Image 1 (tube, rainbow, N blue to C red):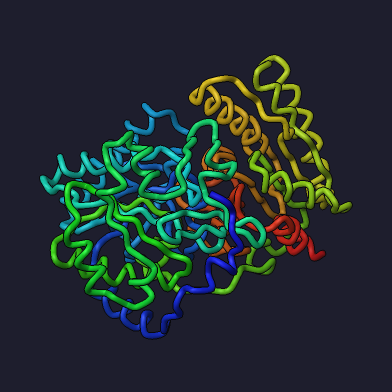
Image 2 (spheres, rainbow, N blue to C red; image 1 turned 180 degrees about the vertical axis):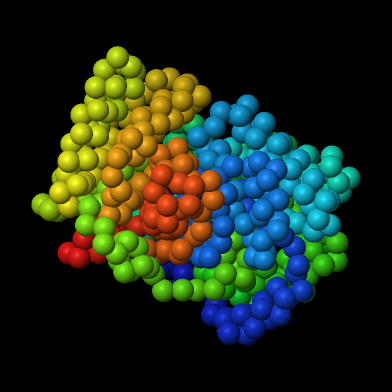
Length: 474
Protein backbone atom coordinates (compact mmCIF):
# COMPACT_ATOMS: atom_id res chain seq x y z
CA UNK A 1 0.00 0.00 0.00
CA UNK A 2 1.68 3.20 -1.19
CA UNK A 3 1.74 6.60 0.47
CA UNK A 4 -0.57 9.17 -1.08
CA UNK A 5 -0.76 12.94 -1.24
CA UNK A 6 -2.96 14.24 1.56
CA UNK A 7 -4.62 16.72 -0.80
CA UNK A 8 -5.52 13.88 -3.17
CA UNK A 9 -7.11 11.76 -0.43
CA UNK A 10 -8.98 14.69 1.12
CA UNK A 11 -10.31 16.35 -2.04
CA UNK A 12 -13.56 14.37 -2.31
CA UNK A 13 -14.53 14.47 1.38
CA UNK A 14 -17.81 16.44 1.65
CA UNK A 15 -18.06 19.58 3.78
CA UNK A 16 -20.49 19.69 6.74
CA UNK A 17 -21.98 22.58 8.70
CA UNK A 18 -19.90 22.43 11.89
CA UNK A 19 -21.96 25.10 13.66
CA UNK A 20 -25.05 22.93 13.34
CA UNK A 21 -23.08 19.93 14.62
CA UNK A 22 -21.73 21.93 17.59
CA UNK A 23 -25.20 23.08 18.59
CA UNK A 24 -26.57 19.54 18.44
CA UNK A 25 -23.64 18.10 20.41
CA UNK A 26 -23.95 20.78 23.07
CA UNK A 27 -27.58 19.80 23.63
CA UNK A 28 -26.95 16.05 23.87
CA UNK A 29 -23.94 16.46 26.19
CA UNK A 30 -26.12 18.35 28.69
CA UNK A 31 -28.13 15.21 29.35
CA UNK A 32 -25.22 12.74 29.13
CA UNK A 33 -24.40 12.65 32.84
CA UNK A 34 -21.73 9.95 32.95
CA UNK A 35 -18.42 10.24 34.79
CA UNK A 36 -15.72 9.80 32.16
CA UNK A 37 -12.59 8.03 33.41
CA UNK A 38 -9.65 8.19 31.00
CA UNK A 39 -6.81 5.72 31.52
CA UNK A 40 -3.76 7.16 29.80
CA UNK A 41 -0.98 4.76 28.84
CA UNK A 42 1.49 7.65 28.74
CA UNK A 43 1.19 11.31 29.83
CA UNK A 44 0.74 12.75 26.34
CA UNK A 45 -2.97 11.86 26.21
CA UNK A 46 -3.97 15.20 27.73
CA UNK A 47 -2.72 16.90 24.56
CA UNK A 48 -6.18 18.19 23.57
CA UNK A 49 -7.70 19.24 26.92
CA UNK A 50 -7.36 21.94 29.58
CA UNK A 51 -8.55 22.50 33.16
CA UNK A 52 -8.74 18.73 33.68
CA UNK A 53 -7.15 16.77 36.54
CA UNK A 54 -4.54 14.06 36.03
CA UNK A 55 -3.93 11.58 38.86
CA UNK A 56 -0.63 9.72 38.68
CA UNK A 57 -1.74 6.79 40.80
CA UNK A 58 -4.87 4.68 40.87
CA UNK A 59 -5.39 4.37 44.61
CA UNK A 60 -8.95 4.16 45.88
CA UNK A 61 -8.45 7.68 47.28
CA UNK A 62 -7.42 9.15 43.91
CA UNK A 63 -10.31 7.48 42.09
CA UNK A 64 -12.74 8.72 44.75
CA UNK A 65 -11.34 12.25 44.34
CA UNK A 66 -11.85 12.04 40.57
CA UNK A 67 -15.45 10.91 40.99
CA UNK A 68 -16.05 13.73 43.50
CA UNK A 69 -14.87 16.43 41.08
CA UNK A 70 -17.38 18.76 39.45
CA UNK A 71 -15.77 18.07 36.07
CA UNK A 72 -17.34 15.19 34.18
CA UNK A 73 -13.92 13.82 33.18
CA UNK A 74 -10.62 13.01 34.85
CA UNK A 75 -7.44 11.21 33.75
CA UNK A 76 -5.45 8.48 35.45
CA UNK A 77 -1.88 8.19 34.16
CA UNK A 78 -1.03 4.47 34.11
CA UNK A 79 2.06 4.76 31.87
CA UNK A 80 1.27 1.16 30.95
CA UNK A 81 3.09 1.42 27.64
CA UNK A 82 6.22 0.98 29.77
CA UNK A 83 4.79 -2.10 31.56
CA UNK A 84 5.24 -5.79 30.97
CA UNK A 85 2.19 -7.77 29.91
CA UNK A 86 1.76 -9.21 33.40
CA UNK A 87 1.99 -5.81 35.09
CA UNK A 88 -0.45 -4.28 32.60
CA UNK A 89 -3.01 -6.98 33.34
CA UNK A 90 -2.65 -6.59 37.11
CA UNK A 91 -2.89 -2.79 37.05
CA UNK A 92 -5.93 -2.65 34.76
CA UNK A 93 -7.78 -5.22 36.85
CA UNK A 94 -7.08 -3.17 40.01
CA UNK A 95 -8.20 0.06 38.36
CA UNK A 96 -11.41 -1.43 36.96
CA UNK A 97 -12.29 -2.93 40.36
CA UNK A 98 -11.78 0.42 42.09
CA UNK A 99 -13.73 2.38 39.47
CA UNK A 100 -16.64 -0.06 39.71
CA UNK A 101 -16.54 0.08 43.50
CA UNK A 102 -16.53 3.90 43.61
CA UNK A 103 -19.32 4.11 41.02
CA UNK A 104 -21.43 1.75 43.10
CA UNK A 105 -20.73 3.74 46.27
CA UNK A 106 -21.58 7.09 44.68
CA UNK A 107 -24.37 5.76 42.44
CA UNK A 108 -22.73 7.35 39.38
CA UNK A 109 -22.83 5.92 35.90
CA UNK A 110 -19.43 5.89 34.22
CA UNK A 111 -17.57 5.11 31.02
CA UNK A 112 -13.92 4.15 30.60
CA UNK A 113 -11.71 5.41 27.80
CA UNK A 114 -8.42 3.60 27.23
CA UNK A 115 -6.49 6.48 25.68
CA UNK A 116 -3.55 5.20 23.69
CA UNK A 117 -1.21 5.88 20.82
CA UNK A 118 -2.53 7.41 17.61
CA UNK A 119 0.05 5.28 15.77
CA UNK A 120 -1.46 2.10 17.26
CA UNK A 121 1.27 1.07 19.71
CA UNK A 122 0.41 -0.21 23.17
CA UNK A 123 -0.97 -3.23 25.04
CA UNK A 124 -3.92 -3.88 22.76
CA UNK A 125 -6.21 -5.81 23.04
CA UNK A 126 -5.12 -6.77 26.55
CA UNK A 127 -6.02 -3.53 28.34
CA UNK A 128 -9.60 -3.20 27.15
CA UNK A 129 -10.21 -6.94 27.50
CA UNK A 130 -9.21 -6.80 31.18
CA UNK A 131 -11.25 -3.64 31.77
CA UNK A 132 -14.34 -5.12 30.10
CA UNK A 133 -14.21 -8.47 31.91
CA UNK A 134 -13.54 -6.87 35.32
CA UNK A 135 -16.34 -4.32 34.99
CA UNK A 136 -18.72 -7.09 33.88
CA UNK A 137 -17.75 -9.23 36.87
CA UNK A 138 -18.43 -6.31 39.24
CA UNK A 139 -21.65 -5.04 37.68
CA UNK A 140 -23.10 -8.02 35.87
CA UNK A 141 -23.40 -5.82 32.77
CA UNK A 142 -21.75 -7.04 29.57
CA UNK A 143 -20.17 -4.41 27.31
CA UNK A 144 -21.78 -4.47 23.86
CA UNK A 145 -18.88 -3.10 21.85
CA UNK A 146 -15.49 -1.48 21.70
CA UNK A 147 -15.00 1.78 19.80
CA UNK A 148 -11.64 2.16 18.03
CA UNK A 149 -10.79 5.75 17.06
CA UNK A 150 -7.06 6.56 16.62
CA UNK A 151 -7.76 9.85 14.77
CA UNK A 152 -5.60 12.69 16.10
CA UNK A 153 -5.54 15.79 13.92
CA UNK A 154 -2.75 17.61 15.78
CA UNK A 155 -0.39 14.70 15.12
CA UNK A 156 -1.47 14.13 11.53
CA UNK A 157 -3.26 10.79 12.11
CA UNK A 158 -6.31 10.21 9.92
CA UNK A 159 -8.63 7.25 9.26
CA UNK A 160 -10.12 7.13 5.75
CA UNK A 161 -11.93 4.15 4.19
CA UNK A 162 -11.00 2.20 7.34
CA UNK A 163 -7.27 2.69 6.68
CA UNK A 164 -5.30 4.55 9.31
CA UNK A 165 -2.69 7.01 8.02
CA UNK A 166 0.24 8.90 9.51
CA UNK A 167 1.13 12.22 7.89
CA UNK A 168 4.71 12.74 6.73
CA UNK A 169 5.12 16.17 5.16
CA UNK A 170 2.45 16.46 2.44
CA UNK A 171 1.93 12.68 2.23
CA UNK A 172 -0.18 10.22 4.18
CA UNK A 173 1.54 6.90 4.89
CA UNK A 174 -0.49 3.80 5.88
CA UNK A 175 0.26 3.21 9.58
CA UNK A 176 1.43 -0.37 9.00
CA UNK A 177 4.26 0.94 6.81
CA UNK A 178 5.65 3.47 9.31
CA UNK A 179 8.47 3.11 11.84
CA UNK A 180 5.81 2.84 14.57
CA UNK A 181 4.54 -0.47 13.15
CA UNK A 182 8.07 -1.85 13.55
CA UNK A 183 8.16 -0.99 17.26
CA UNK A 184 10.23 -3.61 19.09
CA UNK A 185 7.51 -4.17 21.70
CA UNK A 186 4.23 -3.38 19.89
CA UNK A 187 4.80 -4.34 16.25
CA UNK A 188 1.95 -4.81 13.76
CA UNK A 189 1.55 -5.02 9.97
CA UNK A 190 -2.04 -4.01 9.09
CA UNK A 191 -3.10 -0.47 8.18
CA UNK A 192 -6.76 -1.36 7.64
CA UNK A 193 -8.17 -1.10 11.16
CA UNK A 194 -10.45 -4.10 10.77
CA UNK A 195 -7.44 -6.18 9.76
CA UNK A 196 -5.41 -4.59 12.58
CA UNK A 197 -8.03 -5.80 15.09
CA UNK A 198 -8.01 -9.30 13.59
CA UNK A 199 -4.19 -9.32 13.69
CA UNK A 200 -3.88 -8.09 17.28
CA UNK A 201 -6.68 -10.33 18.64
CA UNK A 202 -5.19 -13.31 16.77
CA UNK A 203 -8.46 -13.85 14.92
CA UNK A 204 -10.76 -13.71 17.94
CA UNK A 205 -12.46 -10.67 16.36
CA UNK A 206 -12.78 -10.67 12.59
CA UNK A 207 -12.52 -7.73 10.21
CA UNK A 208 -15.69 -9.04 8.55
CA UNK A 209 -17.64 -8.81 11.82
CA UNK A 210 -16.48 -5.27 12.61
CA UNK A 211 -18.84 -2.28 12.36
CA UNK A 212 -17.49 0.58 10.25
CA UNK A 213 -18.71 4.16 10.64
CA UNK A 214 -18.05 5.77 7.27
CA UNK A 215 -17.00 9.33 6.53
CA UNK A 216 -19.81 9.48 3.97
CA UNK A 217 -22.48 8.89 6.62
CA UNK A 218 -20.74 11.21 9.07
CA UNK A 219 -20.49 14.08 6.59
CA UNK A 220 -24.13 13.59 5.55
CA UNK A 221 -25.06 13.86 9.25
CA UNK A 222 -26.83 10.50 9.16
CA UNK A 223 -27.24 10.37 12.93
CA UNK A 224 -30.07 7.83 12.95
CA UNK A 225 -28.27 5.49 10.55
CA UNK A 226 -25.07 5.60 12.64
CA UNK A 227 -27.09 5.14 15.83
CA UNK A 228 -28.77 2.08 14.28
CA UNK A 229 -25.36 0.63 13.45
CA UNK A 230 -24.31 1.05 17.08
CA UNK A 231 -27.55 -0.46 18.39
CA UNK A 232 -26.75 -3.69 16.50
CA UNK A 233 -23.29 -4.14 18.06
CA UNK A 234 -23.02 -6.96 20.60
CA UNK A 235 -20.60 -9.45 22.19
CA UNK A 236 -17.86 -6.82 22.57
CA UNK A 237 -17.47 -6.58 18.80
CA UNK A 238 -15.50 -3.68 17.43
CA UNK A 239 -16.55 -0.34 15.95
CA UNK A 240 -14.15 1.54 13.64
CA UNK A 241 -14.71 5.28 13.31
CA UNK A 242 -13.37 7.03 10.21
CA UNK A 243 -12.35 10.64 10.92
CA UNK A 244 -10.22 13.38 9.39
CA UNK A 245 -11.34 16.36 11.51
CA UNK A 246 -12.93 17.11 14.86
CA UNK A 247 -16.35 17.54 13.27
CA UNK A 248 -16.31 13.81 12.43
CA UNK A 249 -15.72 12.92 16.08
CA UNK A 250 -18.54 15.27 17.09
CA UNK A 251 -21.05 13.69 14.70
CA UNK A 252 -20.11 10.23 15.94
CA UNK A 253 -20.41 11.38 19.57
CA UNK A 254 -23.99 12.55 18.95
CA UNK A 255 -24.98 9.13 17.57
CA UNK A 256 -23.02 7.36 20.31
CA UNK A 257 -24.84 9.21 23.09
CA UNK A 258 -28.17 8.37 21.45
CA UNK A 259 -27.24 4.68 21.36
CA UNK A 260 -26.03 4.75 24.96
CA UNK A 261 -29.23 6.49 26.07
CA UNK A 262 -31.06 3.44 24.69
CA UNK A 263 -29.02 1.12 26.90
CA UNK A 264 -26.01 0.21 24.75
CA UNK A 265 -22.64 0.00 26.54
CA UNK A 266 -19.20 0.55 25.03
CA UNK A 267 -15.53 0.47 25.92
CA UNK A 268 -13.24 2.92 24.10
CA UNK A 269 -9.73 2.60 22.68
CA UNK A 270 -8.98 6.03 21.23
CA UNK A 271 -6.41 8.71 20.71
CA UNK A 272 -6.74 12.16 22.30
CA UNK A 273 -9.37 13.73 20.00
CA UNK A 274 -12.27 11.69 21.38
CA UNK A 275 -11.61 12.68 25.01
CA UNK A 276 -11.83 16.36 24.14
CA UNK A 277 -15.14 15.96 22.32
CA UNK A 278 -16.93 13.58 24.72
CA UNK A 279 -15.65 15.63 27.68
CA UNK A 280 -17.08 18.83 26.20
CA UNK A 281 -13.70 20.58 26.41
CA UNK A 282 -13.64 23.96 24.66
CA UNK A 283 -10.91 25.36 22.42
CA UNK A 284 -8.43 27.78 23.98
CA UNK A 285 -5.38 29.69 22.68
CA UNK A 286 -1.91 28.17 22.90
CA UNK A 287 -0.02 28.97 26.09
CA UNK A 288 2.70 31.65 26.10
CA UNK A 289 5.87 32.30 28.10
CA UNK A 290 3.97 34.65 30.42
CA UNK A 291 1.73 31.75 31.45
CA UNK A 292 4.53 29.18 31.62
CA UNK A 293 7.59 30.74 33.28
CA UNK A 294 7.40 31.73 36.94
CA UNK A 295 7.99 35.44 37.46
CA UNK A 296 11.34 36.13 39.09
CA UNK A 297 12.92 32.78 38.21
CA UNK A 298 16.11 33.69 36.31
CA UNK A 299 17.47 30.15 36.14
CA UNK A 300 17.97 28.50 32.78
CA UNK A 301 15.48 25.97 31.50
CA UNK A 302 16.00 22.22 31.22
CA UNK A 303 15.01 19.96 28.32
CA UNK A 304 15.20 16.17 28.74
CA UNK A 305 15.17 14.17 25.49
CA UNK A 306 14.69 10.42 25.79
CA UNK A 307 12.58 9.39 22.80
CA UNK A 308 14.39 7.66 19.92
CA UNK A 309 11.75 7.92 17.18
CA UNK A 310 12.91 9.54 13.97
CA UNK A 311 10.90 12.72 14.50
CA UNK A 312 12.52 13.35 17.89
CA UNK A 313 15.99 12.81 16.43
CA UNK A 314 15.21 15.32 13.66
CA UNK A 315 13.82 17.84 16.17
CA UNK A 316 16.88 17.44 18.38
CA UNK A 317 19.17 18.05 15.39
CA UNK A 318 17.24 21.25 14.62
CA UNK A 319 17.48 22.37 18.26
CA UNK A 320 21.24 21.76 18.21
CA UNK A 321 21.57 24.67 15.77
CA UNK A 322 20.86 27.03 18.71
CA UNK A 323 24.16 28.38 20.01
CA UNK A 324 22.63 29.77 23.22
CA UNK A 325 21.85 26.26 24.53
CA UNK A 326 24.24 23.91 26.35
CA UNK A 327 23.90 20.30 25.13
CA UNK A 328 24.91 17.39 27.35
CA UNK A 329 24.81 13.88 25.93
CA UNK A 330 23.96 11.03 28.29
CA UNK A 331 25.76 7.80 27.39
CA UNK A 332 22.70 5.58 27.72
CA UNK A 333 24.73 2.45 26.87
CA UNK A 334 26.02 2.62 30.44
CA UNK A 335 22.70 1.32 31.81
CA UNK A 336 24.26 -2.08 31.03
CA UNK A 337 27.30 -1.11 33.15
CA UNK A 338 25.90 -0.07 36.57
CA UNK A 339 29.35 0.58 38.00
CA UNK A 340 29.96 3.36 35.44
CA UNK A 341 26.38 4.67 35.27
CA UNK A 342 26.52 6.58 38.57
CA UNK A 343 29.69 8.43 37.53
CA UNK A 344 27.99 9.44 34.27
CA UNK A 345 24.91 10.74 36.08
CA UNK A 346 27.00 12.74 38.56
CA UNK A 347 28.89 14.33 35.66
CA UNK A 348 25.67 15.38 33.97
CA UNK A 349 24.03 16.72 37.14
CA UNK A 350 27.10 18.80 38.05
CA UNK A 351 27.30 20.30 34.57
CA UNK A 352 23.57 20.93 34.28
CA UNK A 353 23.19 22.53 37.73
CA UNK A 354 26.09 24.91 37.14
CA UNK A 355 24.73 26.04 33.76
CA UNK A 356 21.09 26.33 34.89
CA UNK A 357 22.16 28.43 37.90
CA UNK A 358 23.93 30.80 35.51
CA UNK A 359 20.75 31.27 33.43
CA UNK A 360 21.85 28.90 30.66
CA UNK A 361 19.29 26.71 28.90
CA UNK A 362 20.39 23.06 29.04
CA UNK A 363 19.40 20.04 26.95
CA UNK A 364 20.24 16.58 28.29
CA UNK A 365 19.72 13.93 25.63
CA UNK A 366 20.28 10.22 25.32
CA UNK A 367 22.70 9.06 22.63
CA UNK A 368 20.90 8.25 19.42
CA UNK A 369 22.26 4.69 19.08
CA UNK A 370 19.50 2.20 19.81
CA UNK A 371 20.23 -0.77 22.05
CA UNK A 372 19.18 -4.12 20.61
CA UNK A 373 18.93 -6.58 23.49
CA UNK A 374 16.75 -9.26 21.93
CA UNK A 375 13.18 -9.95 23.00
CA UNK A 376 10.29 -7.48 23.21
CA UNK A 377 10.15 -7.69 27.02
CA UNK A 378 13.93 -7.20 27.36
CA UNK A 379 13.86 -4.21 25.01
CA UNK A 380 11.11 -2.65 27.09
CA UNK A 381 13.05 -3.26 30.32
CA UNK A 382 16.12 -1.53 28.90
CA UNK A 383 14.01 1.42 27.70
CA UNK A 384 12.62 1.76 31.21
CA UNK A 385 16.13 1.60 32.73
CA UNK A 386 17.30 4.39 30.41
CA UNK A 387 14.26 6.48 31.30
CA UNK A 388 14.81 5.91 35.03
CA UNK A 389 18.44 6.96 34.72
CA UNK A 390 17.68 10.18 32.88
CA UNK A 391 14.75 10.87 35.22
CA UNK A 392 17.05 10.66 38.25
CA UNK A 393 18.78 13.77 36.92
CA UNK A 394 15.60 15.79 37.55
CA UNK A 395 15.05 14.03 40.87
CA UNK A 396 18.49 15.09 42.11
CA UNK A 397 18.42 18.69 40.93
CA UNK A 398 18.86 21.17 43.78
CA UNK A 399 17.62 24.21 41.85
CA UNK A 400 14.33 24.91 40.09
CA UNK A 401 14.80 25.38 36.32
CA UNK A 402 13.12 28.32 34.61
CA UNK A 403 11.14 25.77 32.61
CA UNK A 404 11.11 22.00 32.14
CA UNK A 405 10.40 20.01 28.97
CA UNK A 406 10.53 16.21 28.65
CA UNK A 407 10.51 14.62 25.20
CA UNK A 408 9.00 11.17 24.73
CA UNK A 409 6.18 9.20 26.37
CA UNK A 410 8.00 6.96 28.87
CA UNK A 411 10.51 9.73 29.61
CA UNK A 412 7.88 12.39 30.30
CA UNK A 413 5.89 10.05 32.54
CA UNK A 414 8.94 9.14 34.62
CA UNK A 415 10.07 12.78 34.86
CA UNK A 416 6.60 13.78 36.07
CA UNK A 417 5.93 10.97 38.53
CA UNK A 418 9.42 9.98 39.70
CA UNK A 419 11.53 13.04 38.96
CA UNK A 420 9.02 15.66 40.10
CA UNK A 421 6.98 13.43 42.40
CA UNK A 422 3.63 14.64 41.02
CA UNK A 423 0.57 12.91 42.49
CA UNK A 424 -2.05 15.17 40.93
CA UNK A 425 -1.61 17.76 38.18
CA UNK A 426 -3.87 20.21 36.43
CA UNK A 427 -3.72 20.37 32.64
CA UNK A 428 -3.12 24.02 31.72
CA UNK A 429 -3.52 23.48 27.98
CA UNK A 430 -1.06 23.20 25.09
CA UNK A 431 2.08 25.09 24.15
CA UNK A 432 1.78 23.89 20.53
CA UNK A 433 -0.95 21.71 18.98
CA UNK A 434 -0.73 18.28 20.61
CA UNK A 435 1.90 19.32 23.19
CA UNK A 436 0.36 19.51 26.69
CA UNK A 437 1.42 21.32 29.84
CA UNK A 438 0.85 20.22 33.42
CA UNK A 439 0.76 22.51 36.42
CA UNK A 440 2.44 20.48 39.15
CA UNK A 441 0.72 19.95 42.50
CA UNK A 442 1.79 21.29 45.89
CA UNK A 443 3.21 17.86 46.78
CA UNK A 444 5.75 17.86 43.94
CA UNK A 445 9.47 18.62 43.99
CA UNK A 446 8.82 21.96 42.27
CA UNK A 447 5.24 22.99 43.20
CA UNK A 448 3.08 24.97 40.76
CA UNK A 449 5.64 24.60 37.98
CA UNK A 450 4.62 24.42 34.32
CA UNK A 451 5.85 21.07 33.02
CA UNK A 452 5.79 20.64 29.22
CA UNK A 453 5.14 17.09 28.02
CA UNK A 454 6.42 16.83 24.45
CA UNK A 455 5.37 13.59 22.69
CA UNK A 456 8.10 11.85 20.74
CA UNK A 457 6.13 11.68 17.49
CA UNK A 458 4.34 15.06 17.40
CA UNK A 459 5.19 18.34 15.68
CA UNK A 460 7.26 19.44 12.70
CA UNK A 461 11.05 19.36 12.62
CA UNK A 462 11.13 22.96 13.92
CA UNK A 463 8.51 22.61 16.69
CA UNK A 464 10.80 21.77 19.60
CA UNK A 465 13.13 24.61 18.67
CA UNK A 466 10.19 27.02 18.39
CA UNK A 467 9.00 26.17 21.90
CA UNK A 468 12.48 26.50 23.44
CA UNK A 469 13.09 29.76 21.52
CA UNK A 470 9.79 31.17 22.79
CA UNK A 471 10.62 30.31 26.39
CA UNK A 472 14.01 32.00 26.01
CA UNK A 473 12.68 35.13 24.24
CA UNK A 474 14.53 34.22 21.04
